[in-house]
Image (cartoon, rainbow, N blue to C red; front, side, top):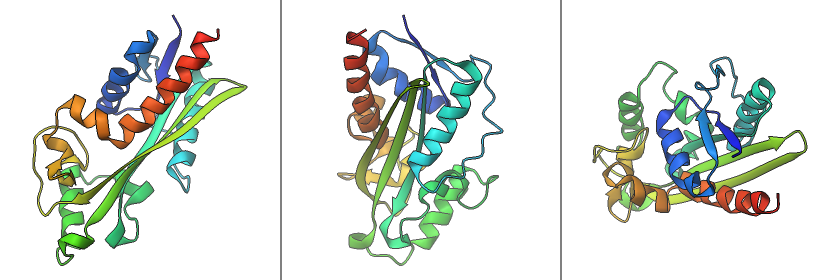
Length: 199
């Protein structure tokens, strides 16, 4: 069984990726389980794809085995695409997501419903070996609600709404079926399925 390292310190992301890739029958381990410390990785890319590659390459150089890394964020049209690649650092590294959400809602306080459009983007980089790399990107369109709702999900999920329901109010399976990361990981799944079946 081929082992893949998921290069993230976010256990919520690990679980989402595991749910979608499980049918491949591969072994998925977190970077922490593999003894890879990602704290020193500087995600200074201009795009989600750049940052996904930075993380994947760092982890691959540490372990030499197949690695999956993602970078994702919330892009709000009324804010010119912010927070974008700075989603995790929005308002400062030390500010928790409750604070980030409050900050974002404050910036949108006077923005009418029809202009509260946004999307989540997720870029995934999978390095199989030194010669083989897969890059995919998923997206989910939605709107920013006026207040948080739901007690599931993580990050900006409580204020990102699709068809009147926030990501935080969806079951994990419902979220996987429409989310940016779900879309990206399904694309990766299909590419890996072809690759593994040819081995």
